[in-house]
Image (cartoon, rainbow, N blue to C red):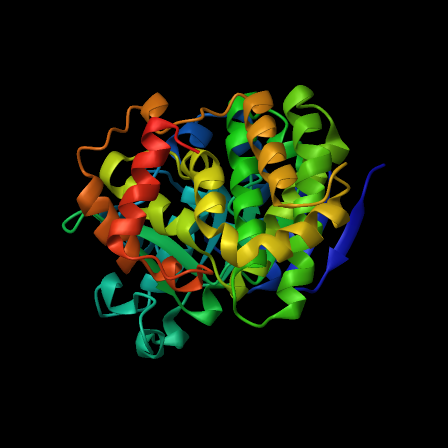
Length: 386
């Protein structure tokens, strides 16, 4: 089955194969005459990007390109993007790529109108009220991976290199005004990247479901998002040209980022410091950490996970059945079982425990773990102790 639909939740979303052709029109709808397309170095070298830039230019718009972004984008990357935007007199942003590119692009769009440093807008207290909204640039977001859901998020995760910390930069209007979910843009993703980003989408939906806060709408979205991952992630890793599976994974990625308004948890509380310290891939970290965090949270989530297993159609309802499914699916997708397998050892365990405890995502975990408990989860994941 193929889809071509428009949604207005949580923002304006265009879903369907080939809909990237609408990008220039969406820029014009937002009043752009000179958009800056922000992406990462890997995508900037691909033929599909040249086609998108040509599409925008052929519509009479002056389109620039900025791609100096790390896999875990830094404050310096964002500032470089802001400088480029201003130097070339751009008036809007096309955020194009995976989660890192989208996060960086959204942060650039925020910062082009600010006179404070980016860290003044960290998602702490009411810092977001410091933002000068009139200076923010409009954004059209186009994901090329199905994982972070950053295209429908109101925040960016940016690394503060001086402090070796990932920080969440937040403002409600960081939510892009227009989104294109075009599965054809994800067809060329290698199986391992498809698997890792798909597991990231699962982690967002799963942590949103398990968060103790009250948000039934987000919980309903999370449950269906998990079902979509179960049905379509193995299919799309096996056959990257499956357009329906690619579409459904893009959709459940957006669902995860919509659902985690309800909260994230210990997977992300650990993945953020590990990404900052080791520059490791965020989705892979969440995928490896997942069963260890589930086990640590078991007493608080047993009933909720049992309900989930009935909905997604596991043969046996219950926590053990769900944990077994997660471990088996990771193995089937080629995801490592331990952090040691991606060259992360326990030498910084104490620091990781402290950083995880202080991470904003920790507040949404069903159990408020101490630094020592986070340290234990981390070392279990290094060594493979379930």
